[in-house]
Length: 173
Image (cartoon, rainbow, N blue to C red; front, side):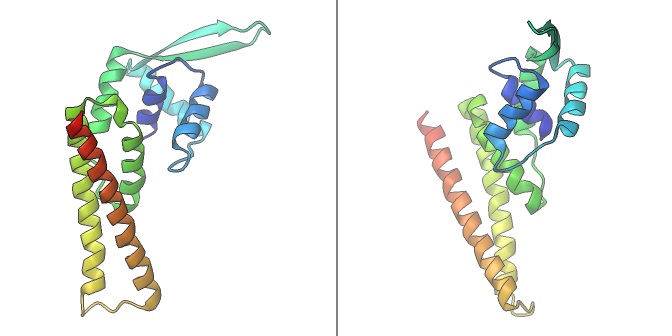
């Protein structure tokens, strides 16, 4: 996910590593909080793969700043990352889906529909898994687990409603 977020923030403007970190926090902080220790190796990987380039600029104060620029290959990779199949692990799915949805403006309406459909399918799967546990007479569920499962079902219902709204908007585009 870190590569996806980096490529997305570089889509409109070049940034230093500090600027990239700041933009990621501004856009994605409710879902993730990557450290510089995660961003730096990702930048190295992206540069080695020729998905971004660097330029070194000396500031007026004599400090060397490295600016990162997304390449055409990086834009193609961003699309590929947004359409890449998602984790089936519910914990990873939720944050991954939210990050991808925040980047949906990059996609064509057709690609956005594909992404929404996959996310909606997995959200329905996870919601149904929670319902199975709640409704299984042979699986004992204590009070606290029931409260958490009920809340999980509600969260997935809200998430699915949001996706249906996005799908409707994409159809109208």
